[in-house]
Picture 1 (spheres, rainbow, N blue to C red):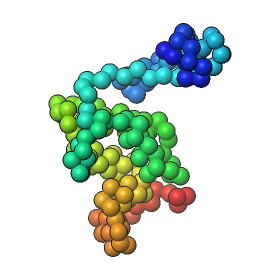
Picture 2 (cartoon, helix red, strand yellow):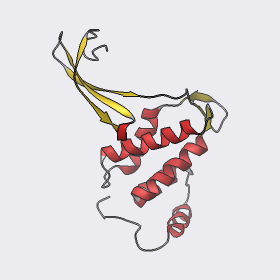
Picture 3 (cartoon, rainbow, N blue to C red):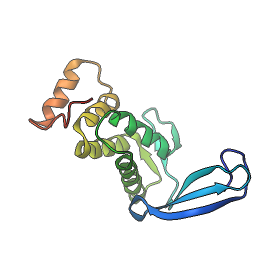
Picture 4 (cartoon, helix red, strand yellow):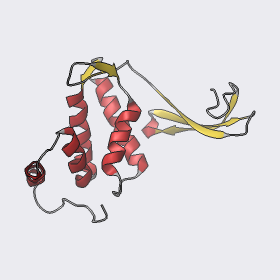
Length: 158
């Protein structure tokens, strides 16, 4: 594995352990050339997924892009980074399990909303507002009304 700091191609694995509920291996590495330490993850990839966007264009599935959009939704919410990683892993596994190589963005968006609904309803509303392209306050009111009573906030620090 090439060192991301100096480009040296000889790095040593110092520690390996299971991650993502056993679906990945986390490796701590050390570069003998510059002394840097870094972490890599090794995951099984069942198939190459291609995302079909609303305008018909296609692009390779980008796990980091999915994680980034979820992190934006949960920013300043009581959601740990490990929870976000578990959500991303679960969605990725679910998409791979469909047996299809092309996945429409709508399926990904719905999977994210479903996952966020169970984790943090504020993050769910944030994500839904972008995903569903809310333009009016009424859009928010309708979504919040559909959530039902009581447990909408899960905290007041957001």
